[in-house]
Length: 253
Image: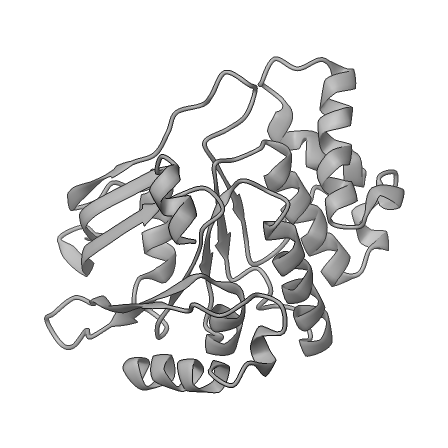
């Protein structure tokens, strides 16, 4: 990823972020720079501020301190960022393609262009033939793939994913992890991926940001950012994979 970093303009910069609610700070001194196609996983114990960090990066909440710079909407009918949630959050009264088109509404596109833009990511996630189906006829894994397609349809510069596979069974989860590896090769978006699963983080990401260090009266922070540095293909079988997982686990513990 070093070539990507050196040759491309960052799509997100966060500097000296302190985050929390009311007068309570839960996370402090966070720095993050994202370039196109970079994949950063964020891990840490429950309540450490992972999802709060995502909301601050998207501008949904204001930081107590610091700043986030994320590009504005571009001229090519895209959005600066999009989000994939833990649950698919599909509208049951809209068919699959109509659910994917949701984020395209308001971008000034014709109906035909919205349909074309929706079908492209559906093909990427292997659901092109399911465009006319109702959400309730899909499996949980298929519904989450629709959610990913909806997020990609707006051609985001940054894709935020908040524990997107946590509600799935182990087999489906592993399958979607493998599909995400292939998908990230075919999109320019930078990805920020929140997860509790350390193996998932190390298997998918270019780097893993470890949050922790909080105690009574003191907010959490970034313990370390671990550069994975392993090839994507066959990463779980790489001799260094288990050691990296253990390293991250020890930081959190």
